Length: 323
Image 1: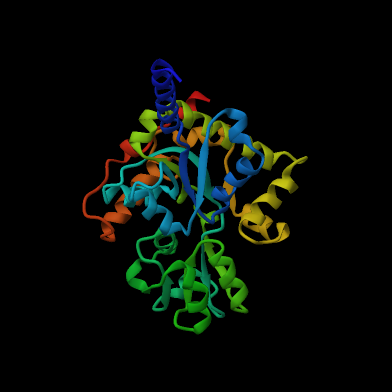
Image 2: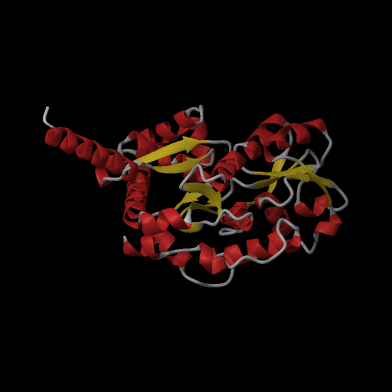
């Protein structure tokens, strides 16, 4: 081989390595919530390949997914809008570019036998993971019933432990999201849902949050990720493919399709047309901006972090608007 050919070969190899570095897949963390498990449809049906973007989805427990994002191991993570602020407050900046869904019943306050309403909680113990979304759900429920947090005794319980804590009799009610809320209902005969996110649509939005650096460097690729998402939503909503879509989602979390249908019913997975209005600036729960402002105040009040966050900087509606 001549020196010229050797040099050209080395140059070509170097260019190939550089190309591979540039073409590294977008790394996305997701966890067990129906609005995020729906990504599995896009993965299984090769929708990312169809739109021409390379992605690498990584499955986590929810808190671990946020930790991985904060450690710069992911380009994006599936979070609630309130937790996007919490993650950002630690220095892990993020931008919400997509609303997957809002909780429509899967987040619940579950009362033990004999607790039939929120008003029955006066003077009682409520197990909830303090500072997380179902703590906010509880405060909303109390407020709607003329009560405050001072009217109950909060017991700080990790969400995945709430079913066992309710069953043990240590508390009179728990706040949890699916699957923990459903497990509590099954584990404790006579328990009942006394309030849920269906009573306050928009209290909890579930989103895809991206690091600002990845969004800046790969905006067109992220747009394609959103296109694949809406292909998956269409596949779930189409009567011809809905059963297959639910089976794909159920398999991801080890449940039967029949069991999983109930989880989907408690999650309003949004089409693009349905989601766009929530990306408009407005006060209150009918806007991602308004809901996130409420979550921000909740986080400050509960000393999750000290200073209010610049909510508008956490939301970029431009990619959804461009579709």
